[in-house]
Image (cartoon, rainbow, N blue to C red; front, side, top):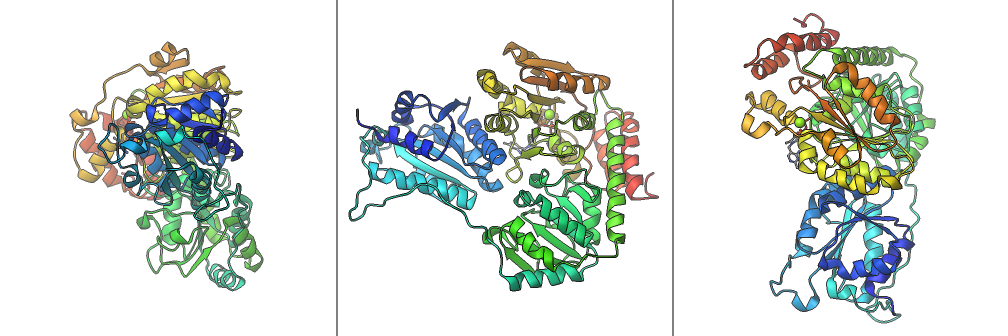
Amino acid sequence: MKATVGDYLLERLRDWDVEHVFAYAGDGINGILAAWGRAENKPQFIQARHEEMAAFEAVGYAKFTGRVGVCMATSGPGAIHLLNGLYDAKLDHVPVVAIVGQTSRSAMGGSYQQEVDLLALYKDVASEYVQMVTVPEQLPNVLDRAIRTALAERAPTAIIIPSDVQELDYSPPSHAFKMVPSSMGVDWPTAVPDDEAIGRAADILNAGGKVAILAGQGARGARREIEEVAELLGAGVAKPLLGKDVLSDELPYVTGSIGLLGTRPSYEMMKHCDTLLTVGSSFPYTQFLPEFGQARGVQIDIDGKFIGMRYPNEVNLVGDSAATLRALIPHLKRKEDRDWRQAIEAGVAGWWQTMDQEAEVGADPINPMLVFRELSLRLPSDAIVTADSGSSANWYARQLRFRGEMRGSLSGNLATMGPGVPYGIGAKFGHPDRPVIVFAGDGAMQMNGLAELITVKHYWREWSDPRLIIAVLHNNDLNQVTWEMRAMEGAPKFTESQRLPDVSYEGFARSLGLHGIAVDKPGDVGLAWDQALAANRPTVLDLRTDPDVPPIPPHATFEQMKDAAAAMLKGDPDRWGVLKEGFKTKVQEFLPGKGD
Ligand SMILES: Cc1ncc(C[n+]2csc(CCOP(=O)(O)OP(=O)(O)O)c2C)c(N)n1
Ligand SMILES: [Mg+2]
């Protein structure tokens, strides 16, 4: 039998070293599925429960491996379901290729069943590259460009293949007019700015007395260089959410997260610095950066499209972060006055003590911060951690101390609910030998995480380290939004929209043959982590956490927090006493005199 377009597609994916395709079947891709049956399941077809999950799995896989993630879905509804995951890739700058089916060419334009204008639908999400393959000769070029463009632009791209085209005999592009050949592979350059620009940047960094560094996900791979620059300049380093794993939290000058979910030391550093060096970040919240005119700014980013747009910088250097910092380092003068650095370090030390104290504050029944703190004390140094969108993102940002080779990510810019569990699954396929820990709210579990546990059941035996731990913050509430309503709208909880039906997450896990542990006492949290980390299969930790523990923004005053809490506690004023202790600790630490 001659190779079909479907056969050749899989062969070319193999040639690109694609080992997994996160996907869901449908007759719009039957020609590819049939080819898969002939290809001994190479690349491996990973069956998600829902195409959005397949896309999230591809995003998680790409985030944690640095390789391209590939997802596939049928025409119409399948392609539509992929969208949210593809937008997650787009907003977080992750290389993902979506391959989707389409109705046969003979039916196109005929309002045929499942016919959706996919070129139009994907035009925005796959704005870097979306193309329909209508003849076999197009295929290698379109696929190769989709992969190369995804990698080059760190973006999702898409290929649409009509179902009848999948079944055609493959014939390669020939040496003829209007044929476009293609070749495999690509060697990327290491971009470094010109010496003159490096010199201007160095002058600014040398002139400043109080340097703050903002190191985002683009600084991954520049760990050593950031440490050296921070050392020379006596700087502190703040990390936006997606950059949480670029630098160890054990370094005394790392101020941790920044923004609404950030830390007080990051907030203070940005308020008082006179120089801002941004590396590999397009952290969007300007109000958490220095006032305009307060600091002189230098930015390094690999992508000229995303540079210079968050702060009025004096120098915008387009280049690879590690190589650019290496070019800068010989021009930097060590700052002999270390007062600024010492103040940052003192703030950081105080902050971690405050975090410990906050985690110890009593709650009903479990303080969610305690859950994160207890894990932080036990995190294996090769762990990969994901968090869903919800209150867990706060505690992920503030309570976890990353060190060693730990990796972590969440939906940073789309901030969509639902990626926690599928990111974890993507991580396990990328790194089957590493422990993976997922934090998810009960809302996210009900939205999709529970169903995706079935995917975990289906595949976990393939992972050499079977530890995938899903920690569910069981608070029966869409808690993050409940708090946003209180803090921003001054509105009390609207029960109809916020309260969640009760579900046993550990019971569901056990029904699938996974390990399930219900925890409803603070004293049992540490033991539950120990058991999950020692388990020989994936574990769901079903943790009864208190929805009344507020995610306190780093800049909030005690009065604001009290108001928010008072609104929240209208029906139950006694609860204020429990929370007040925690608020006080934090406020007294940083706002002496305003603690009561
Ligand atoms: C797809 C999607 N729908 C809605 C939201 C708005 N949203 C953000 S966090 C959140 C609450 C999440 O609740 P849960 O998963 O229970 O976590 P919790 O905050 O209670 O810990 C909601 C509704 C969103 N970000 N994404
Ligand atoms: Mg919840």
